Structure formats: C-alpha cells, structure tokens
Image (cartoon, rainbow, N blue to C red; front, side, top):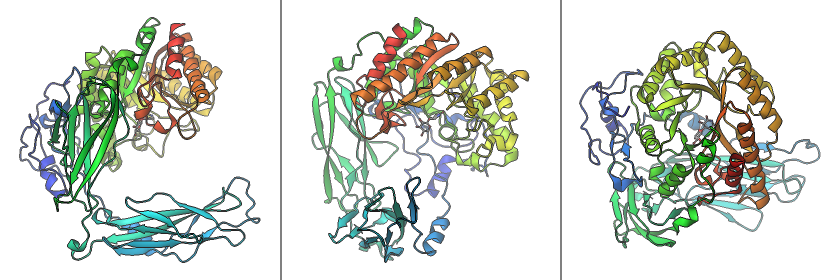
Length: 634
Ligand code: XIL
C-alpha cells in the first residue's frame, strides 16, 4: 500500500463542493495538494476503484504532534456532504400539535394507586430567529403534591428558571444556527413515586425573519476542550474551534503566544486554528484565546484554555511492559487506536504509552466502511495509512477491522440496490485487503454476524438481506484468496458466557467448516462490566472453540464500572480482578493468541463514562494495569 495507485479515474469531489453550504474552497491546500481535474461526477452510486486523487498527501507538521512518523491527510479540501432530505417528518409532527407525554413507571407499579403528573397549557411554538422564547412549565398531579421537573437538555444559551410557585420558565433566544425544529423536553416527576414520570416534548419551529439583519449579533465563543494532561517536552497540538450562534465563523488569536509555539489557521478547515507548543516545565498552564466576531470585529470574547503538564517520570509504568510479559508466553498484547490520536492535545503521551505497552493495534474506526469509503468510488485512507506507519515504527502488528459488518456503513450502501450489494461487498474487501495485505495479516473479516437468540443477524444486516447467510462464506473465501497466509477471524460480542448466542456461533463455525470455508480464529470482543463472573463458562467456550481447531483472540476487552463519577478504590479493584482472571484464562488456553484492549485510556474510550480501561484520563495506570502485569508475569 501507500504507493500511488494510478488510475486518474475521476475527481468529482471538488465539483460537488459548490452545492454544499459553508465548505472551504476546494483549491485550498497545506502543501502537497494536487489540483483536481475536471471530469463530470458519476451518476448514482458506483464502486469505482480508488484513484490517484484518493491518495493521502503529507500534512504540515505544525498540525499534529506525531513523534517519529509522518502524518498524511486526505488530498481533498473536505468531504462533500450529500444534501439532506428536508425534515418533512419533523414538519408533520409539528403540525400535528403538542406531542403526547411519554409516561414511565417503575416495574410492578399499581397504576390505580397513583396517577402520573402532567403539564397544563402547553403548545408547540413558532418563532423567528432572534425572538425570545419563553415557555412556562406548570406540572400538576391530580392525586399528589407538586411534582418536580427538569429539562432533558438545554440548548446553548437557554435557561430554565424557577418561578418559586411550582412552575419554571424556559427562556431562550434562538439564532441563525438554530433554524429548524427544536424538540425541548421536560420531565415531571411524581412527588411520592420518583419512578413515575411524564416526559413532555414541546416542538419549537424557528425560521429566519425576512430581514436577517434584524437578528442580534452575539459574541462568538470557543468550543470547549476536555481537560487533559500531557508529558513535559512532548509536543501538544490544540485544534481550537470558534463557534458563533449567528452561524458565522469567528477568527481566533492568541495574544500571548508562548515562545516556540506556532499558531495557524487550519489550511482546510476554516473554523479551526491549530496551536502547537512544547511545554518544557511541569505545571498547570493557562492560555488566553481571543475569539473575534467575523461581522463586527470589535465584538470579541476571551476564553481560557488550561491543561496540566507532568514530569516524564510520572508516566513511566513500573514493572515490565505488558507486551514483553506477553511475548514470554507467546501472547500478543494490543489496543484499539483512537482515530487521529496525533491530532489530540495529549496524542504524544498516548503514542508513547502505546509504543511501550503494546505489540498489536486495531484501528478503532478508521477502517470502517463509513469512514474509509464514505461515498461511492471515494476512499479516505489517511487514518489507516497513518496507523500502519505508526505501527511499523514501533514493531507492532496491525489487526484489520472490520471488513464486513452490518453497522457503521455509509449511507450509499444502506440505499444501494440489493442486486448490487454482493459486488459492493467484494469490491470493498478487495480494495481494503488489497491495499494493506503486505502490512496486515490478521483480519476481522466478518463482524457480529450472530443475533442475541443465536440465529444469524438477518433483518438488520444489509449483507444478509442481499445474500442470505452465504455472505459469510463469500467474504471468508475471498479474504483467503487475497491474503492466503493471513489469519481470518469472525469477531463477535456477548459470547463470553454460555447461552444461545455462543451456541449459534458454534453452529455457524461447524457449518462453515463442513463446507471448507476458510476460518482461522474467533474474536471474543469482551466488552464486559466489572460485575462479570462467568469465568468458568468463558473457559469452556474457549475450549469449545479450540477443539474446533480455531485460535482465539480477545479482540476488544474493556471492563466498565457502572455508576456516576470517579470510581472508588473498591470498584477499581473489582475491575482489576476481571482483567486478571480474563488474562489468566487466556494464558491457560494455548489457542488464545492475543489480549487486545479496546483503547488505552478512559479519556478516549467509547464507554468513557464507565472508566473501562487500564489507564485513567491522565494516563496514570490503574489497578487493572497492575493486574494484567501480574497475571502475565505469573
Ligand atoms: C466502536 C467504536 O469504539 C466507537 O468509537 C464507534 O462510534 C462505534 O464503534 N464492536 C466493534 C467495534 O466491533 O468496532 C465497536 O467500536 C465496538 C463494538
């Protein structure tokens, strides 16, 4: 891969750009942009090969914090967004009047004993952008005292004020950005039975006034950055994004730029500015950013960005790296890489820990069809290419994921003719495996084919819909032809306990084996909770898979802690014990080849609220990390 694939087929992206509002000019570039040729756009979906204009180009180093490898980016200015159908469903709902409240009640609740609260005097509302919306919410309960209430979500700038008479008022000034239909939801809670609730939507339709210049021009803002911690002497990049409720794009300035820092407007994404600096002493840093309105330059806001810088020593895990401990046992230890981690402020420490601890990496998202092939005949390889380059630098294997999945598909596949789908599937496998076959030799060919009841997933799979269960056979056979020596997996979740789903998987495996369909291993995803305790069943399931002559990969391990806020020491210990036992079970089973975590740090986990990973948000190792070390070392 990574070499130029020349075909020069078509460059329709730039031609589509003018149709899309607020897109950056197509010709703008960082450095190595190629100018688009002028062929006509294809009519309707097709699946052309990637062309020379799909090849990523080198990105300015000032835009990322990659250490030791070059980051490439998409060659295009920006992906054209296909025009969205107008929101006719929303409009019909608005016209139908105030939606009925949704009542929820606790299990076993006796509906005769207590009636749900309700709201009086509400109606849908039609306003102009710039008007002040004011809606009074007055909950009542025919058989109880005053109900409590809370809004589900406040729009930016909105308030929900207490009138101290049992009612509250929602006040909000929608602006240009809000044009459309807003669903504002308030939940009333019964005063005697907190499980008895009425959720009431009010639909607010916001349109532009004839003369938009009558709308007040409000000060712009900075989009909030999450808190983060970095290591001293590592490069830090901030993608700072201005926001303006008037729908314009503010400019950003950093009045006191630290020495050695660079600050530039992103060459392709007009609303983003990239600040790059390297903090050389530990401490808490704050930086003022001036956000300037694009219509009235005298209208500004100053916002402060702050972050923590720690000594390098504070990130050095004690004890041997997981990958070394794994290697002694012929086990690979891996993680799923956050897409574009090198564009995150803390990307350098992320990469350093990845390189220290792991020897196999899965792209968390960059290879999914919606990302890598978002439009017919259009490919975005840069995310996976960059990861492959990073992996090579650190002697990591790359685990391809996923070739055929029913989720995270581009819209054009969802809407494709059933008759064309087999071709789309095989084109995709050919292009992705073909590009990376020299770098990637383990693949999740089919992801999540089994439904909870053990049957194949049917109604929700566009692939099943088109080919029946033969889509699995076809994908596996094709994968073997393209990469004869690669390890081919079926990857599945909720198979870590006995039950119909695991049984269904085994039935599928037996059928495939009886038809000589290639299959080398089963991926056990293992998105668990810290209450997980089916260890014996897991042992048995591993043994069943091993007895069928297949290897086992623990592909997506994470252990969620339920409950809000930071976990207690006891909860962290419980989590650690699950990690420990899983590692132990894998070690006992010679067919178990890899323990791969679905991420590194709680900061970027897809289940971030549940703190499921071995490193916390500041990249400090958790008891789970120690438990993995101990289990692997034993
Ligand atoms: C998840 C990613 O972690 C998320 O960032 C994304 O929004 C959705 O997909 N099973 C899989 C993974 O096979 O690809 C999923 O990854 C998690 C569940």
